[in-house]
Length: 557
Image (cartoon, rainbow, N blue to C red; front, side, top):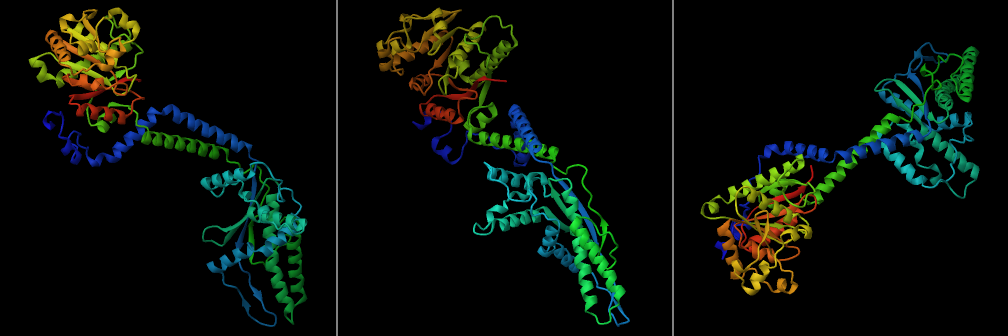
């Protein structure tokens, strides 16, 4: 019947989980999340440190494997000069606003000026700008360089801004020399940048290269080329006038020649250029040190990526890993309290009389606290009679037998008479107090308590649950009245401890747990999953067993 089932009604629990503790204040959400992240990081600190160090080391080695990059910058001040029309008495000056400044910037970036500089410096035959021979895994390396360049910043030139291969856009039917020129010019354009400094009229022209001397030549040639275009246009306007003075023409021609020669040599004009629409305020100088790779920045980025990847894997592992880790998580997920977290001592024979090591003392202390928790949970039954405590493993190998034996030893040495029914003790331990009969024999032949041969382990009456005869175990019914009479006889003498087999190997635990006053589910730390604990809990509840809590066994510090 429904009223014989312990816990909340099954129908009501489907609508409202009355067996769960209420959720905490929602205001603690961010703090709880922060505490969880810190706890996860501390729990997996070795993995985090290892991944961070690995990412840092890999990025450091990668940065040092890249070629050194040099860049140079030349600066211009856009400053339109006054010019006079021949035969007139007025001077005119072009007004310069922000729109005009942007127009001048586009002139600097124009293909005409870039081509003039490219040809004047004879960069077509430069091996660095020309087509590169195909290399294995080059495409993957290029993608990695592009990604890391985007993540760091636009100024990190160490990762190869010219990574997108210009060779991919070549025409296979064209002249090879023309294709080589296209590739070199495309790479030249990608390495050159021109920008305004804020909203001012100052323009910076920058070029980078693996050659220490090339950036300054290109930047200065771009400045000279822009000045050449500006002066050449004014010379053409002056020559178009009918009354042009020869002196004016000679001055403009000298400035044009100086600018052209400077552009060809990759330097600044040797003569003053007062008729240019810009004034040179900074010449590009050969760099003393490479601007890249930024080893420290790349290494720091690698360490950060290693840390983030490690935290991501930990978060994914926590989301999908349902193994039992701590008492709080188990209580919240399973909906039943966790009474103890038993440390792993590697000991398989229970509690000895002398516990000298700190680990064994801690183990004995936890077993004592577990006994107190069971006494509190079964206080009403203990006032009337002795109690029957059953421990069942959620999975095989949970250490239930050793834990049950330790509980029996603690009760016995505390002055109580204890009867211990075991099912999975190691053979070396069992031989010291073996018995010729078992609880399965009672279920088959109906033996009485005085007909059973109990073993003795330091004053603890012991009896195996299963028989050595496999056929007896197959046909044994542990709900037999004779089993109940044996348990009641043992209860009259003292407490009873049941070491039940795991439900994933045998369902006998369901039949025997029905006779207990308190049932504890044992989960092995780091191995048993929360879903397995919940499944065992549901099976025991349906069988009418009074489950009072869980135990986490063999927990590592």
